[in-house]
Length: 125
Image 1 (cartoon, rainbow, N blue to C red):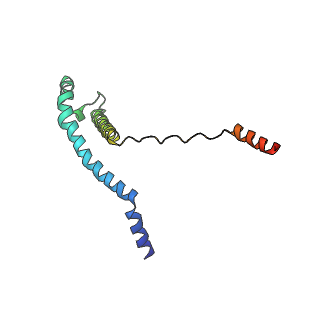
Image 2 (spheres, one colour):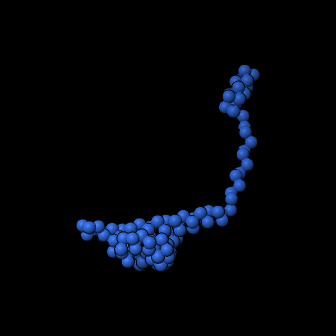
Image 3 (cartoon, rainbow, N blue to C red):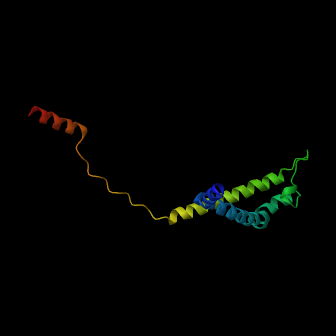
């Protein structure tokens, strides 16, 4: 029974739950970004370049030696779009956070030299 209760405690921890939510949101976000790249960016920006290369699909781009670099380009574009969108989200969240007011500085006490001088004066008495 100890292992089951320990497992329950492990699962109920905030870090595990946060990770699970992050993975699920990431999977859903992946579909959105894939659609953005395939349905918006590729037709709007890459179609002229693809037509010049006489290729209909980005994944079909390959060298004369048969190396398919189109899939790699598609992955790089997806990564850049994801990174940019995450940057915008983090920037928006950071701007929404309440600006922390710095705590007022503590009043300055006597310096070490002043304290030593006071001790010296007390010892003289």
